[in-house]
Length: 150
Image 1 (spheres, rainbow, N blue to C red):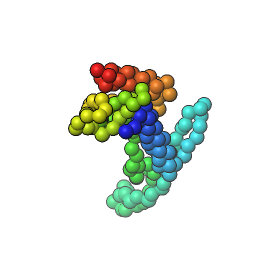
Image 2 (cartoon, rainbow, N blue to C red):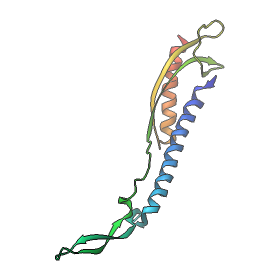
Image 3 (cartoon, helix red, strand yellow):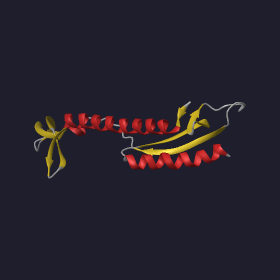
């Protein structure tokens, strides 16, 4: 059994941690193909370029060579993943212990403790503030507590 509040806080931290990791990964990918400058507090990326000699046919039907500059970013495909929200559902058993809403594995029989099997579904967004999280927890807990106390 785990306290409901702790469970939700751990999920939110996991979402925010993944979002931070992906931003670091994106910066690492971009640093190889772009130069970064900051202008008026905004990041400005300029593509790094490479030079290639490419053949072409001139006016006399002769093969000639010219040099072209190509942005490096057009030659590579960065592998980036952006996760800004997660939709989650869990089948669990809810019960009250010492006034605290607790979650556990669904139970087949409810002989010794009053508990309710249920499915909880919600969506968490990365980067939320602490007050939004506390409001989410309080709202869910109030609704779930009513179900358990019936």
